[in-house]
Image (cartoon, rainbow, N blue to C red; front, side, top):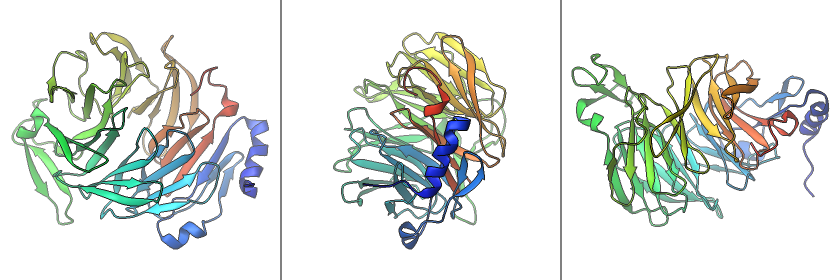
Length: 380
């Protein structure tokens, strides 16, 4: 029987007093580190942090909540069995920073997008690379599997997305934002690609440098629609999967968005713009604005629905003053706030079983144990 490490047992004892546990999982970057992770450091009662090389840009829980994957500047993906303090595997292959991650719905594959302009697909039964998908002209900031697992979408800084068959690695389609024809590509002395508007952009302002075309991709729960979030005014594009073309008329009130997510029932969409303080919720069919919630801090990002669709969680704040807000959709009010430790937070994800909240940070992965928070009666 597996026994929890001593440091985690100590934190679990603290939980009875503070109602919150923050477990730190290692993000080691070298194969030898996987076998001998650094000990966790307790920053304060209930908060742990493991020092590790490289900042963490993306993380995701597996559909069964048993695995947690994280990738970042060390160009690899570390995978842990949730509850253990040492990674069980490290997946390498990318030439630059890992920017995005997604598990397949059946949990048998994981896909990663990178600044090296490649998408890599790994099978998890043997932790082996099965496909390297090329064709994007910029870093891949978004990857997403369709709900039935038959399609993999990847979105790039070049304002295009591609569809792939995750089993064979064959292309299954692509879409290009109308914005792309307004751009020119430039490259710095380190090989990083930048995209600038030719003349004035859609907001009327000249020459803004674009780093991330599609910030995030999201399939509707029925798999019929793919939406790409673009970090510019009027920055979204909807794609009809069956027809293979752009769809107009949905999400009428959406303007600039950086992040987007469908509700579990597919009836509403939540979105935010990195530069703003507002979280928007609207219906998918008519585009009617259901809620527009202003949060205490700017740079609102990474909205996520709870499993029952009653709560939205979102990350907000800048530099080392980030907070996670739990928003009650019935009232539009913030009902719980978690202030993050004083370090930058780049990504968050909830385990599907509602037990854990993970955060990607500077040289660390942080995981809250949510059982004691009593957010609401349903799963987070």
